[in-house]
Image (cartoon, rainbow, N blue to C red; front, side, top):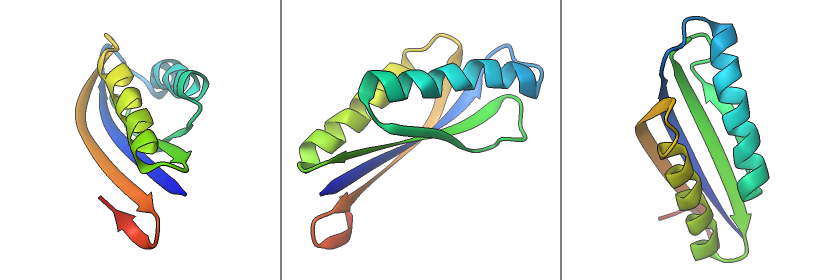
Length: 101
């Protein structure tokens, strides 16, 4: 079993409150779950209204498939007009190792 995680640091566009932030971030997380069948959540910067850290996790029996799903999630998020992808952190876990790749 392999798990690929992808932490995406997002800068949100015209957002002036935490309520407006939720209106942007929640649909992104929901669509990641629906479209890519991954675990997804906002995992940091909850108290900042223009920043969000969204993390996705993909589980597969094949390392390359898990990595491909994480790649697809990043590509989809980077194409959203209302956000800027500031940074991405990837991790791969699986096999006999604690951290692969």
